[in-house]
Length: 420
Ligand SMILES: Cc1ncc(COP(=O)(O)O)c(C=O)c1O
Image (cartoon, rainbow, N blue to C red):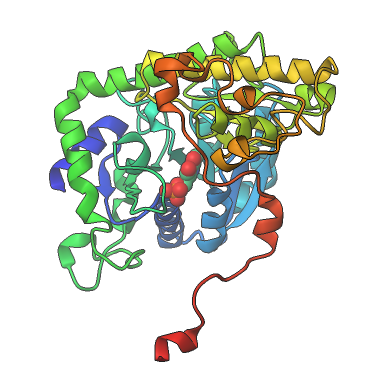
């Protein structure tokens, strides 16, 4: 753990790291508690305003509120970056009560904020601290250090950037990394003095070193990659995202790009014009991707009606190409709906995903074939033959996700049954 902490300091340019937080969001909470403690120790009792750009991940605002801060939202400029004019105005308005800004770099809009250094200076001049959400560190590692371009504190998501499997609800590791002036306020633990400084506000999770059991994954990852390998991982992640953006741009507009037309580690594919033109929705595209053998990328976050695609460094060029070809083929299917070849309520997109039971049922009343339903063009680069072996069959057809979210049904056995 000591070695991992030192390596993470090297990657980020910070001075100290605590591995206690079990998730990125817990790292945010720990980091903001450090900021809050720092202001309190300086007698700045009134510094409670936390500026958060509207592109931020939802956990940012939640963490700020949990840490006793008041959230003030900063607008987004048309290119997806933080609106620096709005930031200047908000900093001036809240100068006496400014605790911090929480900014994600590169942002959740998939762009490197060109004004990041200026942003840090503006906030520091007003007496605030700069929190850089480091969940997107896989675009920075080996290339730039938040601790060097002006930030005071960050969390990292080891379950994103450092190989711990992501998804399924954890366990995650969201270390919080700080410059030395915040180090006295990293979390500690009542049962283990070496878990953190005595000057801390206390623990933020039950175990002194959080999800320590999965740390060997990160240890092995960093040890095997080495400094050059980590840098290459970032370069591959950024290159893959830009490759996807370039290949998909003729079929779908890319919502945000930087000044030179490039994206960072992810790209937002804007499906809203397609929906307007053809009636094909972001849900239809996401579900149709399952027929093509893909789990859909992030849907309708951070912008409703869009897909946010983050290939990371882990996917091979063949897999990235297979994905691009599926998306391009889906665009072709949407065009057939627009051309009136398939009705807008009865086409392979609207009925996706297609289960084995549906495709093999005796009755088939759709205006498209079973083959188009289950083995769409581009699937594993071949509808029959070798490619068909890789066919993924979904276990469930389309469900109304929003209805399900709003009408929870408990499917566990009743409590009485445990008595029996
Ligand atoms: C930008 C950003 N910040 C914070 C988080 C929160 O991390 P976690 O899900 O581990 O709590 C995420 C998670 O995806 C994220 O993308």
